[in-house]
Image 1 (tube, rainbow, N blue to C red):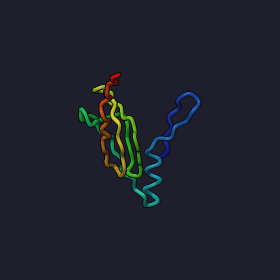
Image 2 (cartoon, rainbow, N blue to C red):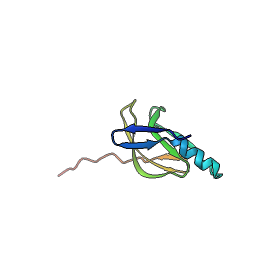
Image 3 (cartoon, rainbow, N blue to C red):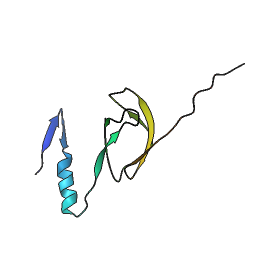
Length: 89
C-alpha cells in the first residue's frame, strides 16, 4: 500500500512502501536509529545497513552536543579531535 504525505509542492513517499518493494524482491534492509555517544538517547537520524558516513557531524537534540562520527554497516565510531592549542609568541 502506497501512502503519500503532501508537504508544500513536494510529495514524499513513506519508507514503508520502499521497504515493501525491497522485501518483495527478496532484499530486506535493516535500519536503526543513531544513538548519541554522549547521553545515549536517540537522535533524529536513522541509518540503513548499507549506509556509510565519514566525518559526519552528529547533533543530539537532547544534550545539544555535536560529535563527529563514522558509520559503516551499522557500526558507529566516534572521532576524537585533539584539543586546540593556544598559540604562544
